[in-house]
Structure formats: C-alpha cells, structure tokens
Length: 150
Image 1: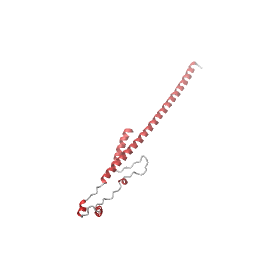
Image 2: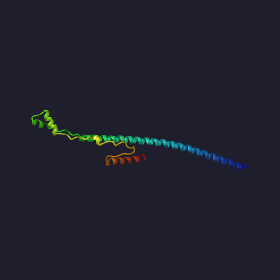
Image 3: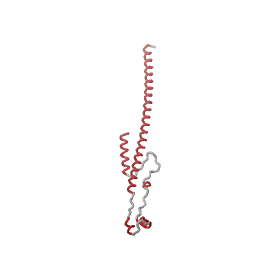
Image 4: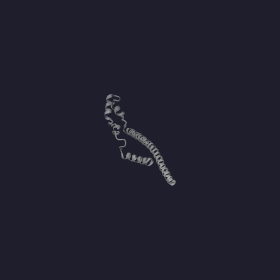
C-alpha cells in the first residue's frame, strides 16, 4: 500500500465516523423536539378543557339569569278587593274570604325549571341550542377562539 492509499482509507473512515456522529446528534435533537411538542400539546389540551369548563359555567349563569327574569315576569300579584267584602257587610268573615278567593283565582303556573331542562347526557363535543340567537353567539365565540388560538 502506498502512502496515498492510506490517506484515502483514513479520510474515508473519518467521513464515515463524522456522518454517524452527525446522525446521532440529529436524532437526539429530534427526540427533544418531540418531547417538547408533546408537552406543549398536553398544555393546549388542558387549556381547551379549562375553556370548556369556563364556557359551561358562563352558559349555566346565563340560564340562571334567564330563569330569574322569567320567574319575575310570571309572578303575579293577587288583586285584593276590600270593597266587595265591606259592601256585603261581611268584612273579615270566613265565607267572604272564601268567596273572594274563588272570584280571584290565580292561574296555575308551570314550573319554569321544567320548561328549561338540561339535555340528557351527551358526548362532550355535542351541544344543542335553544334559539337561533344562542347558536349565533356560539358561532361567533368559536370564530374568535379559532382565530385567537388556532
């Protein structure tokens, strides 16, 4: 073997070892990147879960406020007419009170809570809306969410 051939062999072995080391470093960096991405993805899922919970709380609060408003509207005052009993000269008697209560009957009120029920257990990602306005608000909120976080 010539000295020139030995140099070629040493150079070839050096290039081969250098490429192996370079590949190992790339693999190690890729593993670190994947681990960082996986951690970032789990934090994003946690943020999504927190946003879902916050959205549900706000939705429940809106429904409660709506129920309160409907209850206030539905509560009617009983009209008391004291002149009917005094004109009959039976002011304060039990018969007069019965007669008056029969004349002034309040209509039966449906339980407001029964009209606004929560739907049965549904999958987490499935929602239903009570009105077109609710659907519109949800759509706008989803667009804001997508533009901000996606």
